[in-house]
Image (cartoon, rainbow, N blue to C red):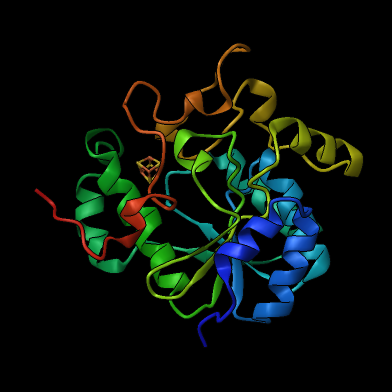
Length: 238
Ligand code: SF4
């Protein structure tokens, strides 16, 4: 059943609400027809923590791209076990298997948009297709694209995207982590302040933005989950 309320008005109202209040509304509104995506890095911990305390059986989508640092996978297993999380791994469609195996090493470097489409966008499109709402952890202070986002957004197919942390800053995230003594991804202490797949992530310096280490020097700042690419149903391979 599509959401019938005035999403724009609600999104404006939510600008002055806490993430917990926004999550409470979302869980009451969408029941079990909602899931959250998480990349299981240090900055993901606050939203995971607050959301699963409100709804312990919440489905948590993890994009298992096959290109993650082993530290990320170990961290995920540890947090999922300690917090008893309902993690659902999302994998690429099998029709890409032969192509990916033939291009495994070069694909992230030669065509990162295609690689992200195969390993992130398409699996997430499929996972959210049967849902009414999708919770994400994006913040306005992360990228120019995210700065334009709204706390509630409706996609063309009626899916409501809920972004409870949109107004939070890096300092808010750090304060919540400290207040709740949340675990830290092992690579954070080594200068990896935003962690994605290994071929596309490097450590950053003290003066760099957190996301400077993502696709560094390649003119790409987003994987496509939060851009127009998410509307794309196919991707032409040249
Ligand atoms: S972040 Fe890099 S390795 Fe991961 S899916 Fe995107 S291009 Fe591929």
